Figure 1 (tube, protein in one colour):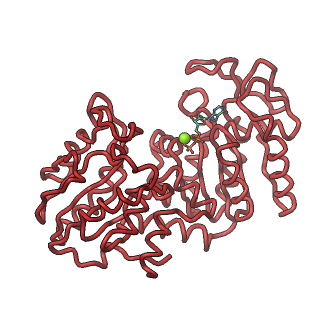
Figure 2 (cartoon, protein in one colour):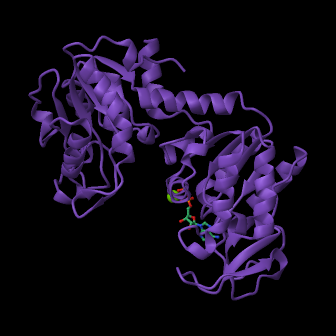
Figure 3 (cartoon, helix red, strand yellow):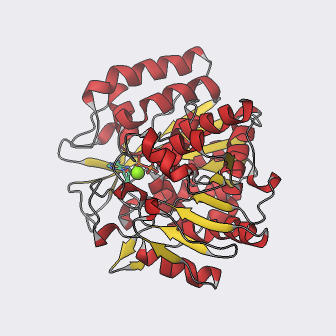
Length: 392
Ligand code: ADP
Ligand code: MG
């Protein structure tokens, strides 16, 4: 991967426009988790220290294009970020009309998704964004898989376009984990549906030595192995795909293990009573909501034996305390293992936070969709645009 990096450039007196990922959770006009904002602070400080005027771009939620609404305003982000940076962060609406800014200042442009043409990656919109800066910095890995005006087209039109430190580090870590992995390489793919992760499962199958499936995905594999899954969440029409993946694993001399035991309930509720079951004893009115303790021990030992672990997706309904033990066991095993470990995914990050294991994971990707697409081996549009600017 070859592209310009922000830290290679002279930023003195330059208008530096940075695409951030400030899509943070809000409650009553306040930021409730500021991980993404804290992650961006070093990039912003670096640009300010090097004498830049800093213009920040981000999306927030999914507003209707062309319509301003307070609900999707970045105002709470401006306020919170100003506290973290210990300097004013001016929020500007209608910023495409022009931005008045001096070196040392920070301006946060109102939600890029209010602009018509953002989603469709409109060239005219991207040209007007690009005309507001001397240097465009892409630093939002989590949006790099989307070709939108503020993530892709703007890179093509900016006077200079480069990758910011967060994006560079993320790509470096993912590349080194996936291209020169310490073997054996183990992937754990959990979550709710096979359908959303089928391509990831297929591409991982060709790269990894061992694959563990969990969650609703595992239910489809359990059904594919001939066991009754009762009322569990699973996808009957994907059973043949699951069987194909199982055969692929066998051909490679490995296997996709089916949980020995599971934890079931008769309702999908927070306080549902949990019952342990061997995998062949699930009743018609029961649903599988977690892996069982025997399986957790098996998976933990596979994790201990691995050289590289890639983790995406909880192996159970970890949001309900009675069904969190399996995901906790996976998280704990990754935490203590000496393998190079990499994790990504919205709910996976929530689980990592819930179990407090972040320090024991070698690299936590900030991207959900972008992480999965990278793992699938796809070229991320924003990265491709940066690369083509570098070649040209
Ligand atoms: P990520 O965001 O990390 O990629 P997903 O969005 O694919 O993960 O899946 C996370 C969701 O899967 C969680 O909300 C979790 O409750 C759900 N889940 C896990 N196991 C099961 C299961 N056995 N039955 C139903 N839902 C499950
Ligand atoms: Mg999710």
